[in-house]
Amino acid sequence: MINTLDFVITQLGQVQPEAHNAWWPLDQSDYVVGILAGICAAISVLIVMRVTGRQTIARAQKEGQDIVDRARSEGETLRKQLELDARNEQAARRETFEKEVEASRNEQKDVERRLTKREDNLDRKLDTLTTKEKYLVDLDNKIKSREGQVNKREGELKDLIVKHEQIIDEAEKEKKQVLLRISSMSEEEARKEALKAVERECQHEAGQLVQRITDRAEEEAKENSQKITLMAIQRYASEHVSDSTVSAIAIPSDDMKGRVIGREGRNIRAFEKATGVDVIVDDTPGVVVVSCFDPVRRAIAAEALQKLLDDGRIHPARIEEIVEQITKETQQRIIKLGKDACIEANIQGLHPRIAEMMGRLHYRMSYGQNILRHSIEVSYLCQTIADELGLDGEMARRCGFLHDIGKAMDHEIEGGHPAIGMEFCKKFGEKEAVLNAIGGHHNDIPATTPYTPIVMAADAISGARPGARRETLEKYVKRLEQLEGIATSHKGVNTAYAIQAGREVRVIVDPDNIDDSTCAYIARDIAKRVSEEMTFPGEIKVTVMREMRTVEYAR
Image: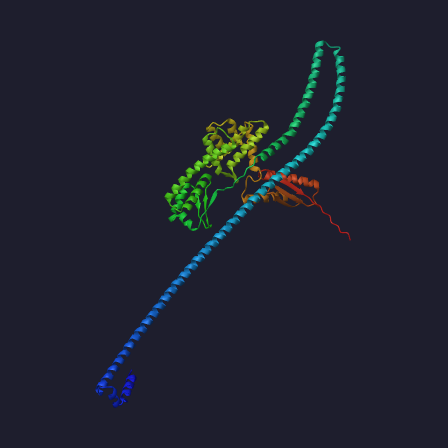
């Protein structure tokens, strides 16, 4: 600024007075004042411009900083929005993936379930084919045996014809002797002698007839009994479900276990008190276990707990409300199950209390076999057997249907289920034949009617047929080990294998030390020991195999 002022003054000082006077009419002092005023104005303008420039720069800097701050804020907001969108997209993708995995898992479970069902069907068909094959083999053996018996009878008949001719000759001779004696007898004495001869001949023929009838009855009794039993099994077959003393309840997440237990355990105590069961909450993921020996209580508790888990409201008042509601529904279901079972088994005139007790058997299992289905099956088997024997099929069906009714009460009343069931049915006016079948189907009391042994046979058929009942894995393995141990304990036995779930044992003997005749003795002895030392349903087939191989090389 000072340099500019000095420059202006220097330039003014160089101006000629003459020239000044020529174009500026004023004097030099006025000229200086004007110059100074112009300089001051220029200085003011420069100062104002400088101050304005600084304000403009400051304002521009402030606006730039505001723009930068806004840009940073918008960038941060945009970054957070992008992160949130990315997280949402990741969660959506994870949820989609989990759904796809769950759908794939469910599909895999369905495939496994179908494969298991198909395998069970194949096993059932295989058992049926094995039974039919065995029946055909037995039938073939019976036909061969019958042919042998016919040939033997033909030989006996020829011998009888020869003997009969000899007897006729002897009779003719005896008649001649009798006539010779009669010629010296009176009429009364001759009549008595003739009657005695006829009586002796009739007694002889009657004895032969009785002997033939007895032999034929002994031969046909076993054949007919097997035929009736096999026919009864083939004419009726049903499926059986499995259960145990515990029920596992699936929970959506392990966090629900805390809600089931409740604060200081109040929820689980209220639930156990209301249902009479034990609730087991352990480290097993996704499962809560309900344990009780009373199947009805266990079913009520399982259904109530499942409903509480679905509802989500778990507290003592809600627990009591749900348990009471499920108890009423279960009681109505039991009554309906009993009525439906009576209709299916075609049992008429049954007291409602008895029908209700039969409905309770739907929740009772015996070795994995549902007792209600077992009772219906036994009723049809009893009718089939009774019809074949010419007895009252309706009475036999009633006896078979009610034979295990005591199992619906044996956990509440002391004593065995035959006696409990007999006393219960006696209160409601059941007939003596039914009472005797209920109380005597396990030989607890003597059988007074033919229906009791029929029920015993049908009960054994229903419980012993393949697939009807199951055992625990430990008992199953022990039974197989015991079966193989009995077989391998014989001298000369190399190894033994229990196959077909323990229904057959195959024994391989040393061919160098055991001959064919000894194989029959070993098979019979093993079968005898198995019958005496083991407890098993149905029958066990013992197959002894001996193979001799001789190898030579031609050189």
